[in-house]
Image 1 (cartoon, rainbow, N blue to C red):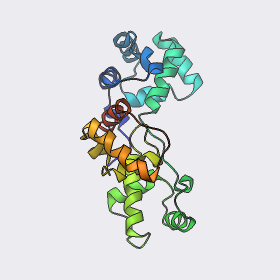
Image 2: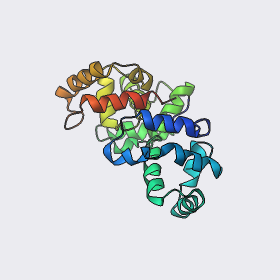
Image 3: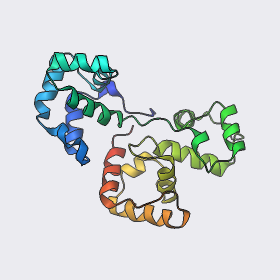
Length: 214
């Protein structure tokens, strides 16, 4: 199982559908302006899928060249870049998870597991030795690694989601948003995994984002 979505198999039509069906945050809403025409303009210059688009936006020089060839403003492309980069959450380092003790982090490192991507891949292959960590801690970290594949999910938020009983991205994708909102709030109330509150609208976004995770 892949950690991220496959950019090569996500064509521009699928990207457009995702943007149009997502409850975008206000700063992203300009992406919907003339979106069909913009996707057609990208296709006309050889951008056929999400992988092509990321390659065309991966540096200021490349972005400027794509803006010139497609006729799409650089500001629009910069916003598009920030948005689609969110579809590929960065791996989270275990050493940055302040609730883990040094021995746990060291044991993971010695096993070649320093981040959520590496642990998720190893777990997917069944390649984690049972002697690496306490079974309970390992199970928690595997769940966190899976959930951190979802857009907007930090390790602390992943802990709350897992404590609420949703330990995989696929489970979040199938969840009723209102039920999930209440379950996360209840799990966080005593443990204080994260500060602040996460509302129903945010959880609806979370459920939708989880639906795109492999």
